[in-house]
Length: 343
Image 1: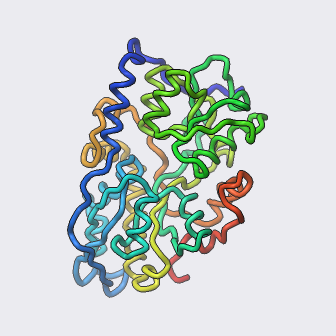
Image 2 (image 1 turned 135 degrees about the vertical axis):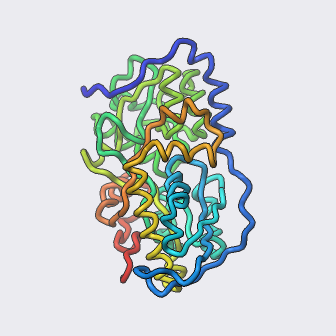
């Protein structure tokens, strides 16, 4: 069995768990949506200096992944391409979809499975850029499986047990089942319990669930309360590879109406991602700008991989697993899921 890296729980951490979760719940709540009206426009070309700045409405949620956009705006990567981002904060990626479909927002954030599901339901969404990706490091993953019970040694031991997921029939469910199957357990025997991330941490500590599929900052909070990582599902899915778990999306219609704008957006996001990967402290420094996370917690958060590009082929393993476990009904056309300029 591979032993995964984890921090030793601090004395008294469990007693502070409820307070910590309450603080993070407040931190992850939606902020007031910005009221500046949308404005779009094209420059001469993505390779030349834009004639004028245009304001692009971006739908985001207050998670680590989107700090890249704030950092890129601060560094001038969007301004260099004639773009000013206006951030509109929602409660979740699904809540942002109607505003993108209606044209109120030019693009928004979501996990990649939700984009595939939307296309399966007839919504013409396309990924324009990656947001966060798995690390490719088996000992330092995202969406890890965490437990407290010492009797649970690997994900195979979770067969027949209760696993917390933030949303049924979505990314966390796929990750849980991938990990259980990879460790030799029956993925269909697990009992999935839908809970918000803060409630998952509390339920794990209370013994109401046996494990949960974590996302930061709740991975770090759970570790401080005595939980440990037993599996990193992305490494089980595609060992050593970096797979986009979240992305920025728009609609086929919006992209077709102004491909130059989206090409410039794609370039600016890619430069922001590359800068973020090389400067993790600057990503951490952005978090107080759109969350109320405790500074000490910010310093210890696991950061995802920030890659500048994503391809349909990169998402194949995740799409296959989604079909296998019934989260998608059929294999998506990944060349259509991801937009490439010139297509």
